[in-house]
Each structure stands twice: as structure tokens, then as C-alpha cells.
Picture: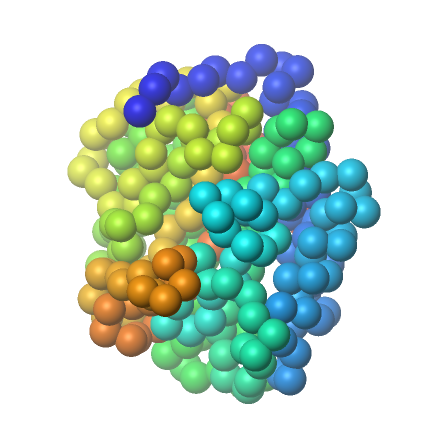
Length: 256
Ligand code: MF3
Ligand code: CO
Ligand code: CO
């Protein structure tokens, strides 16, 4: 892969605005995520919201991907394709992943949603996946090794007897959808490049209940499921490395 791009203040502002819009999509869609709704309906609401804000959904046409979002239910790890025949039911956990292009700049974020009452096991994996993202974000500061993000995520997942997907990674983002560096969610302590202010990348750990391995659906070429059919959960933010640490560009609720 090529060099990690250090963004200019002007580029950072553009990425900040696009990231904010992606974050707003995830807030907007929350009230529609309920039993009986199709994932295609959720996708259509997201697409309309993005286009109403003069932006483009980055996934449409990306390597042939057909939709404005990825919606990944239960054992689907990532890249679930919204479908008019996929209906949400009580007990489902799902990740909705949105990437926007606004004025040429990219923002990428995802989070888990739950439908009605969910099992204790499902609640646990959602919780652990969120905490894995937050632990990773805490490692973002100039001078730290990128690999420490994956180090702390792997350690926490393992302590909770879950596994970390290594076949899909976070990525640099901003001027393009997927830039250098690759952000591994399981890594050795003090491995990888040194973080510098002005870098922008995603952290998006996928945490599995059972084995870490995945299988991509051979019919649609996208849907990645756990190879053992057990649950998976994921949260994602777009992060800026600042002089003092980090800014979570896709956080629109003031959580960080
Ligand atoms: N948004 C995803 C990510 O976090 C990528 C989706 S690519 C698609 O990197 F083609 F599947 F939409
Ligand atoms: Co991403
Ligand atoms: Co994403």
C-alpha cells in the first residue's frame, strides 16, 4: 500500500463534515429499526437522507456493491446487502454501516442496533464490541504505534472469550474510501507505523462469539458470515489524530 496521507486543515474540515453526515445517518435510522421492517427499507431511508444532504453514498457501485449501506444481521460479520425479503425480527442484532462522500471527502461509521428483547449472549457481544472500539480509540495519539489499537482490542476480546476478525480491517480514509494504513484489530504491542497528527483512519473491530474466520456468500459475493454460524458484532468510527490525541469525527452525539 502507499504512504499514509497527512491531511491539511482544509481537508480535515471536509472529512469532518462528511463524517458528521455519516454519523447523523446512524442517528436518523434508529427509530425505524424495529420488528417487521425490511433491511431494504432502512437502506432506502439512508440513501434518501444522504442525497438530501447533497452527498453520495460511497458504497453504491463500489467494486460493484449495489446499495447505500451495509446491513449485517446476527451471524453476518460485515457487507450484508440490504434486501426487500429480509425482515427484522425480535431478538435480532444488526450492524448498519454508512459511508458518505460530501464535497469529495469520505466519512465512514457503523454501529449495532437491537430488535426488541435480545438474548444475554447477544447483549454481551454488542457490549464487548463497543468497548473494543473505545479501547482502540484510546490508543490514538501522536507517537503511539498503530498496532497498539489491535493489541488492546485483541486482549479485551480474548479476556471475554470472544475472537477478533482478522480477514477485514480498518483503513485510512478521507480523500478516498480505503487509504493506507490498514488498521488491524488484532496486533502485537508496539507494532506498525507511528501515529502522527493529521492522519485519518477508521477503527471498526468485528468481534465473533466463536471462531474468528469468515465465509463470503458465493451467490452474492459480498455477505461475510461467521464460518461457524455464531454471532458477530461491530462498531466503527472515523478518527483524526490530533496533537493531543484524537477526535472522533463520526461522533455526533458527543460521546467522546
Ligand atoms: N463501510 C465499509 C467499511 O467500513 C465498506 C463497505 S464496502 C461495500 O470499510 F462495498 F461493501 F459497501
Ligand atoms: Co470502514
Ligand atoms: Co464502514
